[in-house]
Length: 237
Image (cartoon, rainbow, N blue to C red; front, side):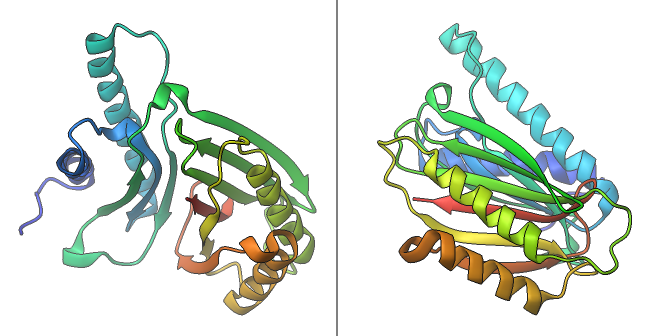
């Protein structure tokens, strides 16, 4: 139960290798490219690009192995990644992964992305649907265009954010009967008031999703990549 020494680079590599081994223990044919959604927790903003880089490196290695076995030139559609900065992890770890995988054909998954501007913010949305149409993952990011965070009017952007999320749900294939289960909102705690955020998101989720409203989970974080101030991950099954 001792963490590997060597800093964030070493921890990131070993921890992802362990993730892959756990996946293979659950199902022998499962590898990192079967992950459909991943959340990565780090304790330092400088670790964000390291975590992303290691994620991409391991996925490339996974693809090389797959290509050598299958002689396939197609690119698998990999899971959506969220990297967030928090104050502390168990055993003073520098990095931790939380993943959900689907035993499907990543080459046959469906993916789409869209973006829009909303009152000083940019909203970006991505969706990955499993090839079996049994589950999906949706990611929505709200980033600040203006450098100022004072006197932010959140009502319009939150409305547009949830409206875009609803569009993503509606774009799932006709064969997909998956419903949104957990609407996890990582938000920069120095930018938003949790109570205001909770009230606004809940109101618009109930308005647009009605009986399919997912459980809203607010997670305050110290930092997010780039100019992101909210990163939402939703699991559908």
